[in-house]
View 1 (cartoon, helix red, strand yellow):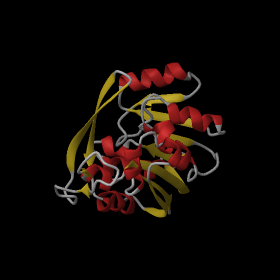
View 2 (cartoon, helix red, strand yellow):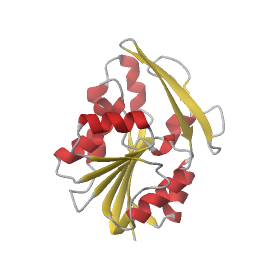
View 3 (cartoon, helix red, strand yellow):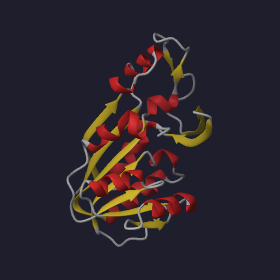
Length: 218
């Protein structure tokens, strides 16, 4: 319970996820939290992650969910086996984001959908100039150039470093288009009212924290 999943945008993301169908693929599943939530909603899940530790944790948490250790850009599944693919907060952490999108499209049947959540590129490109609630949001570097970045967070005595890659919006949309995926919904999410615990956090209601997209395979 120490990150954005429950507090900031899981419920908002589930609003764009279609009802259960034939098969749902969870790409970059981590320790399987979303896989388990989707299973509880009636989805038949196959999950994939490239981290042996995360795969082991996902299998331990629910042995009934099929979890594969694999690269998202080389999925161990046949063509057109799923009607839904999920990439929740994983694409910005992948070395080959376009390859992962292409593979997601390959395993989707015609009419299938890819639902993804990422750190909003505005968020990864800039930061607030100060700690005040009215602090301006500043992009000091080049938004249009991809780059690696890290976030170092500490909560309840736990210190974690997240390593990710910034992409401008164009990179994600070009990857979707090249894979034959048509965007049908896009949502930019600020911090929800219920998540605000300190006055200065209201500033995250002025700029988006996350981007949610649902795309259709032709």
